[in-house]
Image (cartoon, helix red, strand yellow):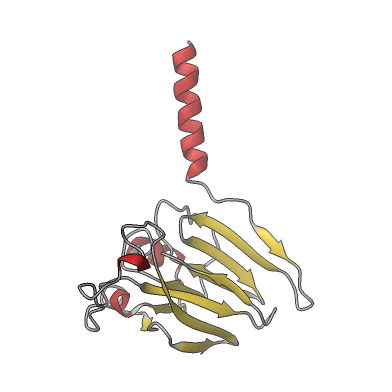
Length: 177
């Protein structure tokens, strides 16, 4: 009986680990900014009447979630980019900005390269380099044998983003790999 209870507890905790965390709401003079961590890099931001997703991918749960006005994708790895998740949260008119390597798979995305800034419906979006925090894959490993291939965009650092909300006029989120 104790083993059954332990197994049930393990599955319940595992399920909760894959569930979205509680949203954080930041009040501003122009209205609330609601940030909901979904899983790993997957995040939902709702502000100024807009719905923005960062790195939509499984195992984040999107059932019942609002459809996206904008999707930002920072990396080609499946924990950042999942075509099925993108399709699930998209609607007619959803815009997608992504790292150049992502555009090869998500062909409806518009590229935004490291160092580039774009404006989307009053929001300023800037792509910045991001590194893994793992010491074997981070910036300390960048050396003469590790260069970025401009055609494939396959080497760290991968693209990340900072965006400035028209609601708060402050950088609201940095996405990392």
